[in-house]
Length: 152
Image 1 (cartoon, rainbow, N blue to C red):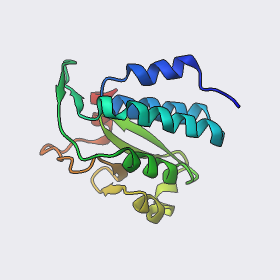
Image 2: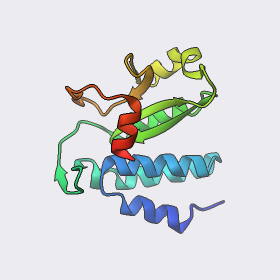
Image 3: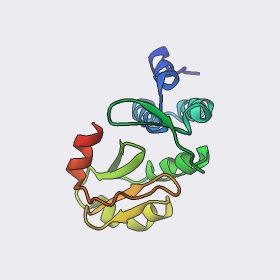
Image 4: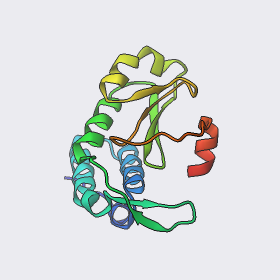
């Protein structure tokens, strides 16, 4: 049985926020695709989830506590559903997951499957997203590329 690299394990252990943990998870999912590896990646996500579940980071890098009703299954179930859809990819911007077309029109063709994964459509951005449960939307309307710049 193949084992997840030490570097990836360290990345999970070093995640300071839930958004960072999700980003590490997505990176590991892209690197390892065998079912036995995916179960190890899922286990690492579950292992570190409670440590970072309520931790957020300000723009200047200061950590603070913020409660969330999110569970491990909320994100994992969505990802396992979305990864089966051809032509799309995902990107974490802060604690929100955004669905990105790799093949033009793929998200439009698969909108029902994406919706069934728990995602919502941002009409102004014309993109699908998965927000943490009970996440508050910003009063300011950002374009997707502005969000990428803020969170990259």
